[in-house]
Length: 266
Length: 262
Image (cartoon, rainbow over all chains, first blue to last red; front, top):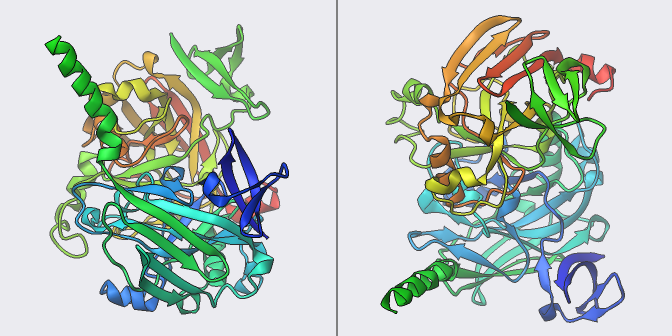
């Protein structure tokens, strides 16, 4: 089953896919354009992988890591499907990263990889935007690059694990304004989903609602204000976000300045 | 008079208290000895740590700044997350992972956020602070700070927080609080938040410039240089002026799993 969290008609609902539309738990059938999509899971601890595809590591001129390169994300960075992602005016290179997101379904400690997939409740898509201008060589990549407000769209659906029998063979694609720019397959991960669950659970306890963003293949490209970015994973869905500029966030401040200015004149 | 907020282990709510001394508090009009009450972690949100925010920590690395992998000194605040599995409360044992002999004790002042803080200017930073607490930001010692250190810093029980949140009104100057670490009663480290590179208000401005802090989130201001090391069965006490002390002991994880704590 494909599940979503949406806001509709004044309330937050759980919903499932119903013939291309959404069926809310209260029975209403609504069009997907008529809801506000929220992240399909309220994120708890969120891991993200760097350089987990050999081609991408090469693209960034790094040799493939011997141990997973992982960092954590806070709840502030996540937005739902069809949301707005802010590009700061001073950024010269802000790129998308289409990633398979693995949602943990039960408490996991010291799990061997043969058993690991039993601890997955489902899969979704994340777009782990990065602004390379802000990269520094301390706990790299750091939160200024990877944990910015609005910079991790996630969704639209949480797809039940039982509906994805082989998560290690899914096509990954990104389109910028409809044009294909990134293409890969989850079979090319350096550390597989099972490896990652074994790795993290070997030194810390994973809990339901924890999410692992498993890294991105090659094919990065800069994005511009106004671009519509579609990240797609076979069998999971298509996650869309729009790049917006600083002006949307500062217009409130400008109008209050304007008001003061006008008042001064009067 | 010091006003603070505690959370008791079996309650869903926080309680307002007055701290009478390190030993006694006043709660609902009654006097209690701190060691007699079961304190839970007093915070609910995300805990963010700050790397290299003490002048001494930066000084210790300065010969390496201009060499790979760092190449230049840090510009922005360097942050990391202490995830939920690391949270632990006052007097709760810290598990010493199998095969690890020593843990680094990270004595950190925690800023507890009171309301949604986005792009806050330093002049207004205090408006977004509920109060202050103490965190023990424990790490497995690691020299390189080039890559994120989840395996070293995000282990179960590696972030005791407490014993309480002291209201900001009860703190005279959070940018000048003495911090001391005692191991088995012996003073091992002494520093002060007056040695921060980014003061509390500046840190809030620089962090909220790109990420929102929410009510209940905690921003740790940093860990001073020469963090002391502790081994199995050591008792750790972190004291911060005007807040109190946070006490935990280090216990091998095999022993804790047998007791059902892990």
